Amino acid sequence: MSTATLEKPAAAAATDTILSLNNIEVIYDHVILVLKGVSLTVPRKGIVAILGANGAGKTTTLKAISNLLKAERGEVTKGSIVFDGERVDKMSPSELVRRGCIQVMEGRHCFGHLSIEENLLTGAFTRRDGNAAIKRDLEKIYELFPRLKQRRNSQAGYTSGGEQQMCAIGRAMMSKPKMILLDEPSMGLAPQIVEEIFEIVRRLNDKEDVSFLVAEQNTNMALRYATYGYIMETGRVVMDGEAKMLRENEDVKEFYLGVAEGNKKSFREVKSYKRRKRWLS
Amino acid sequence: MSDIAAQPAPNLLGNVWVKTGLIVVGLVAAALIGARIDPTGTIHNIFVDPFNQMVQAPDLLAQTIWEGLVSGVLYALIALGFVLIFKASGVFNFAQGIMVVFAALTLVGLYEKGVPAFLAVILTLGVMFALAVTIERVVLRPLVNQPDIILFMATFGITYFLIGFGEAIFGGNPKQMIAEQLYLPKGAIDLKILGGIVSLQKIDIAAAIIASLMIAVLALFFQYTRIGRALRAVADSHKAALSVGISLNQIWVIVWFTAGIVALITGIMWGARSDVSFALEIVALKALPVLILGGFTSIPGAIVGGLIIGIGEKLGEFYWGPLIGGGIESWLAYFIALGFLLFRPQGLFGDKIIERI
Image 1 (cartoon, rainbow over the protein chains, first blue to last red):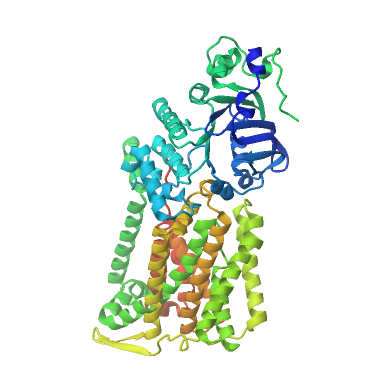
Image 2: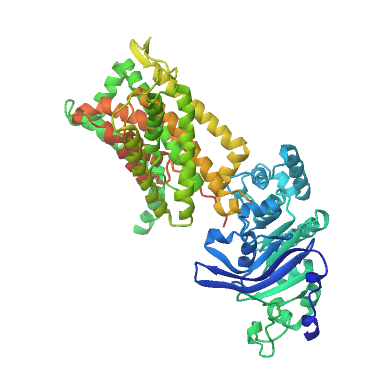
């Protein structure tokens, strides 16, 4: 374990980075400190997972990047966020979408009263490249998600959870993103559907060169598809590493994969474990 | 025994329609029986006599319904402005009524200052746009994420600001709408039908046509354009709309401007039928019962609700008003609305809440 965790994250420095968070702090309502210095990087065309239990700060991290925080009275008070070589921590969500960074929110949030097709088309709201291009991309989405094509005229509110998740991802794809922030895609879905969704993520990553930052509680599934993972607890990154390394790590196995024996529930309770703060400035 | 009796009864009465139906049947039966027993008394006057009158003089009935229809269309237009803003920004815009007056006043005021009529219309549209931008910047943006009631109170502020501002600039005297200069027709058409004469004011016909056109245009705009789709998306979920990159600020300006256009057209039509003054505000408040009837989130609801209230209050005034010395028109609408609140609080066409469990 020790050698693996101390190894420098290869992705950060070596390859081209699309997103990097540098020691960010998030405060809600001016008083509640939720993120206490989170740093992470996503390589271009990579799939990176943020793992952790409820309330660890995964969603807040994603919202800090997409800047949906402001609508919930949250604020990034420290640190910097760089997307595609540009500081973005003061940008509005719509400016970010235009630059190619879009979030798919937890719980999908399709527009229930709009049809599936209209949902997809709203994803193209920020685009300025004309109807023909949008139409072409719509067909492409239907190729990727044949189920959506079947249901194109049904109200999104009446489709199944899996279809809504596909709709939300498809809607995000319609904005021609370079990167998708995917929050808890497995929530409330049957294991088979979760697998399908992650296969789609892999395909989009492979064929459309979209980078993914996925927040997931389903550690097992996320580590099978991601190349790199960060584990968060109470607003901090407590561990990170290559997905393969994390999968084999004894502590991760015990706390998140439910494999090993024992009563310890988190890194905090492991006396020997030293919280790594080497990224903190 | 009590068990057997208790079981099915609550189920049957639990159904609103069954309950309403029973009440209506009961009332009608009571009325007929009462009228039979006492052919000249109050019950006869309320429940039988008005209908006799309607059958005996169908031309009067047609005239009354037409007048109700026209004011109903205008109520519908005002309600439409409310619905637009409520759906897109979740704000119940108390100022919608005063926006109607303000738009009409601006138009007439500009004309009186020597601006040609059609240029004045364009300038007024400009003023309404400026108003939309100002409201978004000064009121909505700083108050975003505050509780709904605070935004509602803010629209009260807007209302009284507009009244004061309008009076300061254009004066408080009633003004004549520039109907002729805008080529709105004058006079009446007399139809000889139903054994009598039904007289239709041309301006009323124009109002009905223009209102229908505008509603159709709005419906198409909402259904088929990129912005219209975005507006519906925002109405559905603010958060999701933000996440796909729809700028709420931009949408709010568009919506308030659209409501401003609706207000201007309503103001022109209404002003042409009476005159332009802040007294119109009372009329604008009639949109409240219309909204309760039609549902706060439904455009067809606003239209149907407007027609029901318009026709209902004219019929009430004409046939039942004399029984209590007239004046029904001013409160009947609220009375109908109250009845609706008791039985169908989401209105006739209120949004179905789609929830998957």
